[in-house]
Length: 345
Ligand SMILES: Cc1ncc(C[n+]2csc(CCOP(=O)(O)OP(=O)(O)O)c2C)c(N)n1
Ligand SMILES: [Mg+2]
Image (cartoon, rainbow, N blue to C red; front, side, top):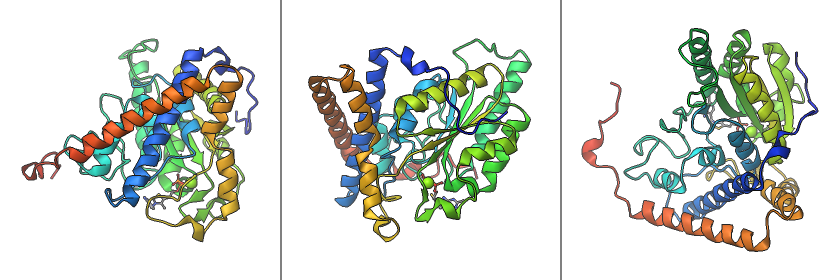
């Protein structure tokens, strides 16, 4: 049932139009430029905290473009800036959360930034304890399957959610919730996809301290789901394995565990110093294999991304990020009188 490192027989990405390939590039770039600005704002003392997705953009955008964006359910984790942007979270939304200002979409500025949530985009609200989103996403997938089997939704209706996608890091797979969610997805053959964004570290803890196997995807066999390892710095490779997983979910064939190997180009968050736990040479090597530069080369070699177009995208991204920052900086804080709104008890 499980192929550990699966060789793709089909390459669905070969069918993508130049327009879509460029749209994927655009979201990777926009997420990166937004992310970089957040670091600057933190170092300027303007915001309290930032957790970065730099280095993970290829995995996240490849995944987003393979699902029915904004319709299928997504339960992201804190690094999923590019994933959420490709689904519809804007730099302005993100800036409002960084500054904790009124109008912030995920929690009315109650939560820390990067706790994604958007009802209109079918992005589930995130909790801080890592891996809690996995059983929640499995529950969403169970609901989809239940509705399908009871004639409450038409499996071919593209306006309805047809799968649940969740993401987490490799370190978080040590949490019980991950195993419980994966097991549930396997037992019930759910329309469920779990992407483990394996960047080799859980804050300062290297992967060897988290697991005794070489690949997270090897564990798929224990849950009776399909497992696949993919180069998470290659946006189109991720898209391809994701399309496979999406087809499996849509057609009722069950769940998939995707392990995307990538590298965290920044410290864990704005608040730690990675010089204490990883060698500089390792980081420099990863920077040379930056997923955005890699995709840029791919598109340029094929004449899809010209220098002029690249410049235009850079200018557009800069303008959007500038505007988002200005908007959030000058936005008011939430009204004091709203303090007790949306509180359960
Ligand atoms: C249950 C729980 N334990 C610890 C933490 C603190 N914590 C936040 S992120 C993190 C590291 C997670 O690493 P990984 O899953 O590899 O994801 P990455 O940050 O590398 O993307 C830890 C330990 C937490 N949020 N929840
Ligand atoms: Mg990690």
